[in-house]
Image (cartoon, rainbow over all chains, first blue to last red):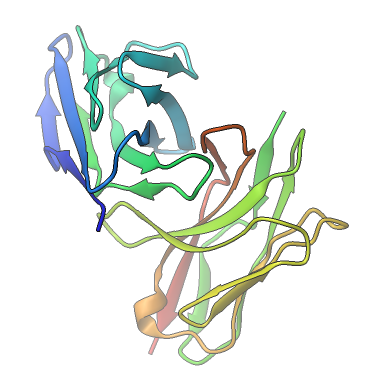
Length: 111
Length: 113
């Protein structure tokens, strides 16, 4: 069966520090991968999606970037965090146009 | 553009009460519709889905019917339990080779014993 791992579960980082969140999927090949953010008062917002290695599409201009170095690995990064980057980050996967399945999320607090 | 509108919460019910959470959508194409549930501190879990008009998705006693004429996908459950307390998200996806989701803002459900 397919599983998705996301880490860390919680993170407190100072303003201006770098960020790296990692997501890996097991049990499937060539998944589509997604990063969403859930911020207070702003609902769930798609940040990036990827349909293959090295292919990244950005939905919202922001202080973040994403990379997909391997088929089942998706990384969310920032060079310098802002207070507004605080939120709950969710990684998800799907195959083709099928349903998306989510990881457990990372709670990021920028202080 | 695409959007999903859900009723504001929180919805507060007593155990065994009937639940309805309204969801309407606007889409530039013919979307698939989903309900996801989020328990405190956790990620989202797919609750049910429907991919075409008049389809009924169902799971764990929850149901929702894809109504194209009213662009709606209301979530219902005949008898809620305390364990159903969570945030419920309605979402749509336009099938285009991948499944980016557009979410509603979520509705918190609180069920008391």
